[in-house]
Length: 355
Image (cartoon, rainbow, N blue to C red):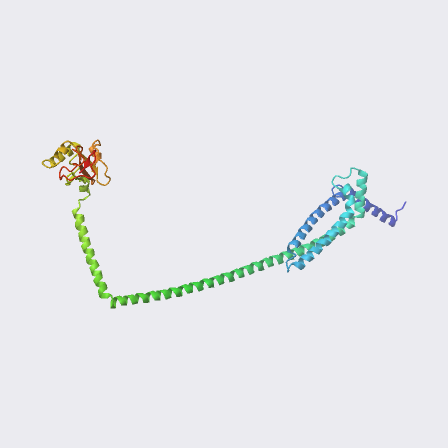
């Protein structure tokens, strides 16, 4: 049977349909692949729209960016509505064209063919709309970035100008304070110089001779004092001599005689007793000294110096010691008197009296 031109066209049309069906049923490049790729693109675009919405919320209160943010928000809302409508139209293909499919091969093949026949043009139109919206959003984002950068630069410049003005005012204030301090220092210096000149003239005119006389007397007194101190210092033994000479203790005996006792010469109680016996020889109280009826007391504290202590620890250099005779026997109270001058003692007691 001959084939007419119309029949050829029908065959070509059928061939194209078959080709589309084969392509639709291809798992790698068919309807399922297009559907899954479109879903991924929609997720990415949705994320971009969320970022744009966040940007408009951040800067829509700024005066110079308010109109730009409103335009960007309107474009984003229009793109979002377009996406929502398209997602609603292709929602029924989700199970069959998804990565796993429904598991029913006949149903999945039928949905793939319907996707290729019914939504191929819709997909291209949708992608064109998305590209248009994306281009608009990109231009708006670039414009917004430029405006934000310019605004930040203006704010930084304003802050720098304000800081410079503040620093200039502070510098002027400090310079004013320094000028005031300098003027006051000059005034004080002038006053001090005037007072010093006045005092100098007063001293020269009125107090000059008297002042010079007083200064001369003071100088002469200082010279005399220096000479006296030098003589006293020369008379004192030097350090080596002082280390060899030990100061004696001073003894006031029972009859009032004052005697220095050199501890380097008299070095024991026996030597001390021998010296006392020699000093009281041929004077009153000699027998008391021989019998050791006397006591020794430290002059300031009135503390008794007992003979039981070692000689080296009994006396100190420079110490003052008093000697007293002890009387223990009397005839009666009314006759209690001093054995030397026979004066009656008002404080006499049986324990003895100190004369």
